[in-house]
Amino acid sequence: MYLSLLKSLNRLSPRAWDFIQLTRIDKPIGIYLLLWPTLWAVWIAGKGAPSLKTVFIFVVGVFLMRASGCVINDFADRKVDGHVKRTEQRPLVSGKISSREALALFAVLVGLSFVLVLFTNPTTVWLSFGGLALAASYPFMKRYTYYPQVVLGAAFSWGMPMAFTAETGELPAAAWLLYIANLLWTVGYDTYYAMVDRDDDLR
Image (tube, rainbow, N blue to C red):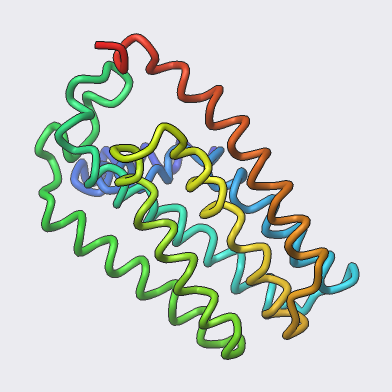
């Protein structure tokens, strides 16, 4: 039903579908992989009964930041994706969306995410800058390190300490243990996922 609803937008406006593909809204698994661990942290920090405000902020924030991460990733890889079978039809590669439009969308998504964080507390606001730095730098790290999955893991896990500070105002050891555990989990599944492009990478 979810995908059917999205595809109906393609019939109404093919242009809208291009932006849906750019933000990967049509592929919700990425949202789940970011949302699940964030909600673990929200519920643990809230001792099983977190505030509805915190839940709302982090659910919507995950959706927005995952979308922004996909946009900046495609912007960074726009000159490479055309040589990879899995990514050769992405909107930035095909020219359906311009680089300027992608950067503008990234700025809007990040701006909306930051507005949400402003409803938490100063500690969480400061932590959000770290999350933005990780999310924005990950795509470019693929050019400078053989271990970009570690940066992705750090970015995908950053919502966990933020959830603790938003709910409790503190950063206990449990927050960092969850952070490290999820970072390692992310490194594992992203390494497996990357093997799909192995042949193209070797070329």
